Image 1: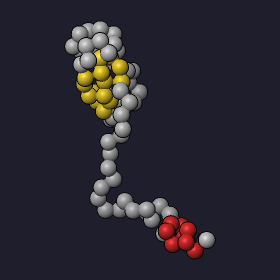
Image 2 (image 1 turned 180 degrees about the horizontal axis):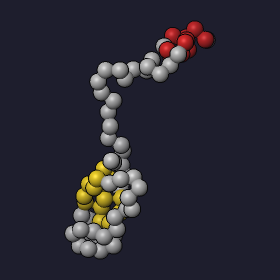
Image 3 (image 1 turned 30 degrees about the vertical axis):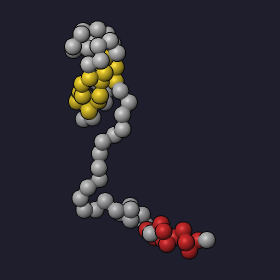
Image 4 (image 1 turned 45 degrees about the vertical axis):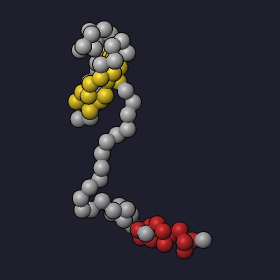
Length: 74
């Protein structure tokens, strides 16, 4: 489940909320109880770590090494 950042436009209260993608956005601020709680747009925070995450994993044939492939084409 993704973590969404919320901020209240009324009092400035900020909170990170773990929600399903299908859940409705929160509207009421837990701090001031105004209907001014909005999602922030932020960068996704994930990292591909561990073995097996290489550029060649899902490519076939001559496309496996893009650097050599583009040099030989020119």
